[in-house]
Length: 149
Image 1 (tube, rainbow, N blue to C red):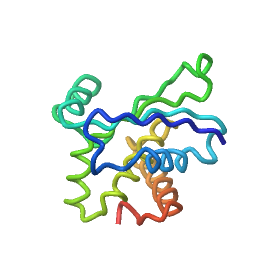
Image 2: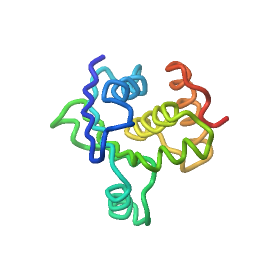
Image 3: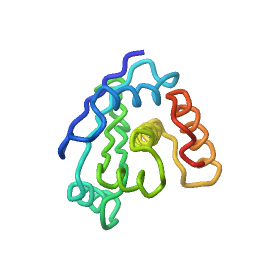
Image 4: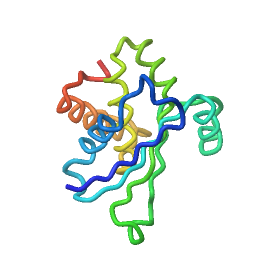
């Protein structure tokens, strides 16, 4: 399996997971689904997170993770899955409020974003159950607890 992961920091990387850990989480989510994949993960602050959330979803304020699938360009760039944007302050606040370790919640958000790039969703209950089951399985393989417990 060849998975290329480009990690970009649009905010301070200090106190955030490093590129190696983020790439590990991406690869775990892709494993068994694609033999070749390319994903960009951009870690942002509140302002950029809010701007992107409003621009693409017409929702005010930042959200934890946004996924931008690269649908229809596989012929030009084989394996290109798309981009994930993670708003660092939101993820860290959620981890604290939910009593999770920061690392476990970061891993969950990366896995969640990659699964969206791979076509999974949680709009309908049946889809949500499937996606959550995959998240739990992947996170358990990485050594993290059930994010929904």
